[in-house]
Length: 334
Image (cartoon, rainbow, N blue to C red):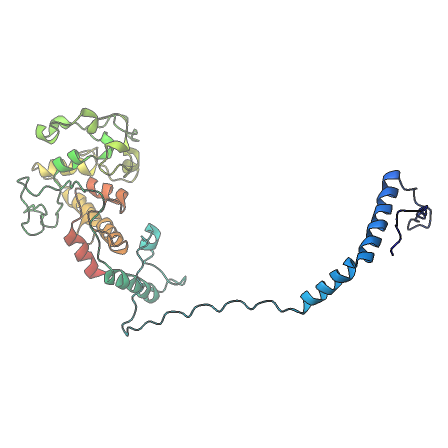
């Protein structure tokens, strides 16, 4: 029979010594009571056999092996002998276009061309765009009575066959351009040559502006909400002047020249202005080519406004709206 461990006088625990050999401070009443309780509980556990059972369980658990992880399922086996086409619809950045998808840092034309060809080939192979989710309201109206090429819809000027915009000045204005400030002499930011610019809507046919609110074309402050694509595009008057693109006869720039050219005026500056347009929106114009390639790489239609609205707005300022045929023509050169 086990004797009660709580009966009889309990020995006073000896005082411990510190590391220096000196007697430690005496225990507090709480510490003495705690030490007695620990001693009593340990004795009870030993008498009941709990300590021995715990040790046996610990040894048994160490002998058991951990279950092996389940084997991963086998990878599917491709049955077709046709090579898988790796197509990416991630829209390349402007920098990637300018660097022609360079694959190396050494500037090798051969490597750069090879990388560009690989990306272009994959994009062409996977190009099958679905109709855009949002309806597209084209600025281009082929039934406006203007002299156009019947096949392409581009405008024709017999004395300058290389100049082929497809939007008339009226269509550019009515679509929504330049944040609404173009025809205000003080519209937008001031130029470096003065506050006022010699420009007026009164110079041109009234039907170009009929039905439009005045702030749609001669507002004082630029507002992106007035632009067709709801974004800011293009530079201000000071930027045009600083880069030498403005001459006195057309102080508001290219579009003012175009409006006057369309009305029949011809000047010695026509060749320069047309050359600028060709570099932007001509057959191999950088911005038209850029926008068409973005459509192909993103697998989107020519009229999907989610693809580069800033470039689309810029193209609108240059009197051009890309067509499905433009995308096909660019794909042939990719």
